[in-house]
Image (cartoon, rainbow, N blue to C red; front, side):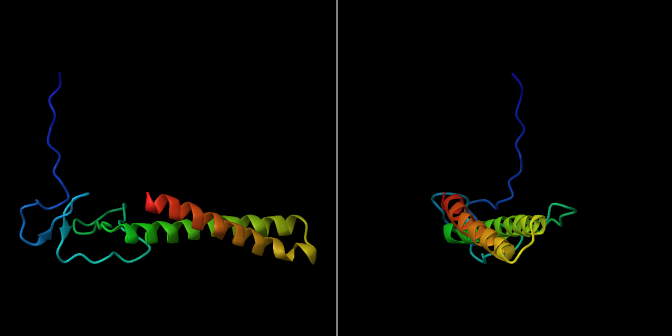
Length: 117
C-alpha cells in the first residue's frame, strides 16, 4: 500500500476566531464579501491572494446564471447571424433575435438548475 501525503488546505483552520461556522461546507470568513463578476480566479500566473470562493447558494446561483446566459445567448446569437447570412431576406431578419431569445430561455433554465444544485 502506498502512503498518502497531506495536501495543505486553502481554507484557514476552523478554530480561527475570525470565522463563522458553516455546517454544510468550509467555514465562512468573517470579512467575506461576494467576489465581483465575471471571475473568481484567474488560472494564468495567479497571485497567492487571488483565489476567491462563493459560500452562499444565492451567490452561486447568480454567478452560474450570468455565465450561462452570456455563453448560451452569445452562441445562439452567432448561430442566428450565420443562419441569416446563409439565406438573407426580409423574413430572416428576425432569426438572430429568435435564436438569442431561445438561448436566453435555455440558459435561464439550465443556469438555474445547475446553480441551485
